[in-house]
Image (cartoon, rainbow, N blue to C red; front, side, top):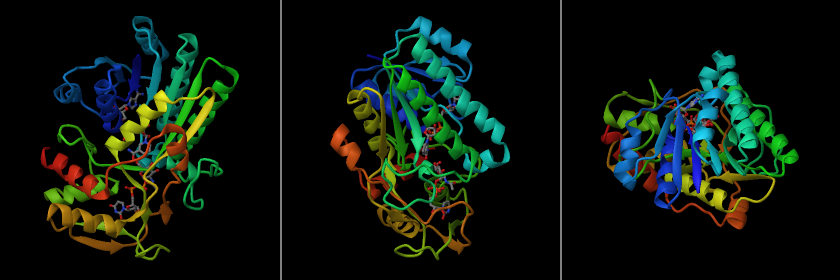
Length: 329
Ligand code: NAD
Ligand code: UD1
């Protein structure tokens, strides 16, 4: 079975390539290296013993995609490629709408043209907006506070509408919660460009001394300790979730939350990181960050019942593996 992994040199894509190669899939990566480096291919080879075939291609460019689909018989598409910086998307919305929507459209066109039966899309819990937790797949999709989130809602719609009228194409929309952690080898992980916006990369950079102090955004939320609560998921568990979704894909349109089902507060994450790694993370409590929700965690029963998938790794594992990766940088 050959799988086209767009964004396969990126953070989540690279971990998913490792899991797929280890399970015997033929993996072909398409990535334009906007937010990743070519040496990730060597790292995937070090871990799995196999270097995936690679195309430096822009997935929003249909002609570049045609080359890949003509040269390879693709059985499934895993579409990770996209821009993901929420703050930047507010400042330059067209950059996000162009890249993320045209990528989805061009790939869906290829799926139909080259008769690819399975398409998996990287969506996000951001589509639930500020709804009530735990988020279920049947919850209404709420307007996002940013263009990045809108591209996820729109891409879901584009792919669902396409699959509904094309019975030869089945689509699975995977709504990720907060992926953190890294492969246990310390070879692949998340490498943010510039100052990180997300919590775990910020913590690891403070731990390393690259950044002086963490800012905790808000301590007056209606949560266990007043700080934000998130459903952190180990990126390797997330990668296995993709393989389960691929293997158990049902005809039509499928939607699954990929999370642990458990909320962890910002302070709980900091304390766990400090304890398992024996490092102090200096922090200040500051005002809330605009656009943040108090609590976000998944109802994961659908993924368990239909995909037979659930997470195995703990928050301790996530903190240990994130730090091990950062230390190796
Ligand atoms: P990432 O930036 O590490 O990986 C994305 C990859 O896509 C990068 O290697 C980048 O070079 C590539 N890319 C971007 N635009 C491209 C284009 N037009 N053509 C070809 N390649 C292109 O991001 P990630 O964290 O691995 O996220 C993967 C997907 O999961 C994204 O769609 C993201 O929106 C989604 N997602 C991520 C998170 C998260 O917290 N990381 C949460 C929810 C959803
Ligand atoms: C953010 C995005 C979401 C995106 C996800 C992955 C927003 C509003 N949401 O999710 O759309 O899918 O990243 O890219 O940007 N925190 C701190 N200090 C920091 C950083 C974060 O206290 O320096 C807190 C936040 O306030 C939040 C929690 O940590 O409560 C998690 O934040 P973050 O890692 O940025 O993820 P989300 O906001 O959940």
